[in-house]
Length: 372
Image (cartoon, rainbow, N blue to C red; front, side, top):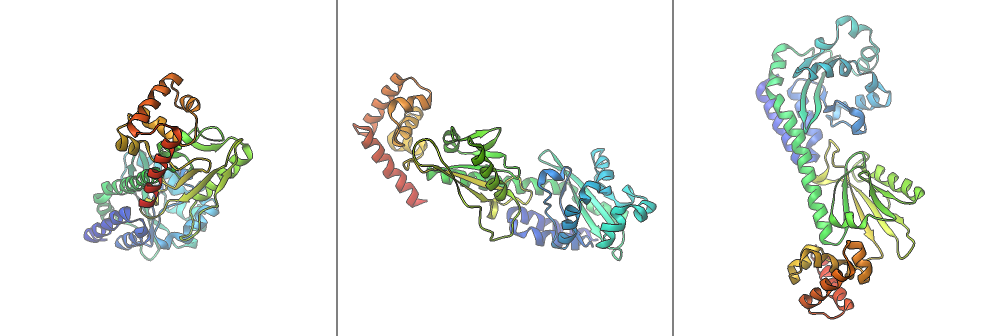
């Protein structure tokens, strides 16, 4: 193992954080630079990731058996290693966590590791965004155990691994926020969820639309009807689950309501630069109110007509077809206050009726849609 080769492979991990499609090759190159069969990123609490681990391609079959056969629950290396990392160790080697007798007798070594010829191991511990991770590196019998000198080379690069994981998450979140803003300009309610289906961020339209038949509860999108909610949670689970490239998203769900057309809810797996292999950003959930008219955002209305934020919110609700009294109730303002605001809106927009106001805003919304 040479410091220069490890440093070059580390640059590849930073590149992969920016361009997620490069992760398999970057991890493969890092394994080769360390004279190993393969490597992966492993969290302290793997069940929180859905048992999905960013790994080099040569680890695919091993990890499949590791998960499917339940070895992650009886992982001797993890059981011995995490307490040592918590106490301040940065690099662990095989002989730090198992004796030769244990390696000859324990089922984890005799069955799974012997099957894939992965008897030798090193792990680099680090913390990313408050969560503890490690980077296990596995070697074959022929490649031999890691030496103390090699551990020193790995330790020199240890501070970088947390930065790589943190950078990947921040860039994915930035892409998610960009998608949220773009869809809001189109008048679409959208939420970004993580691998557990929990909401990471939602735009203002989602927060205002998610009420009644569709609502946000305990940081999740829920449907009021139990049977519909089961289907909703199913499509969200499908969207956040690992999938082969090119797999189509789950079909949309239509949520009926007492009056008018239904809500349409679509769940899109995170893709492109939004795809975080550590799965803190997992999917976009888009809510379309099929009963609503197209409407521009509050910010655009304020800019176009010089409305106050309160006037812009009222104009948006009125343009969606609500009468003044219902709009006042939805916005939590007194009816008389809404009447005063409406008068100001009519003056600034140079209209005299609600129908004219709706027509003007509909034109702006359609213009937005064609531009985007």
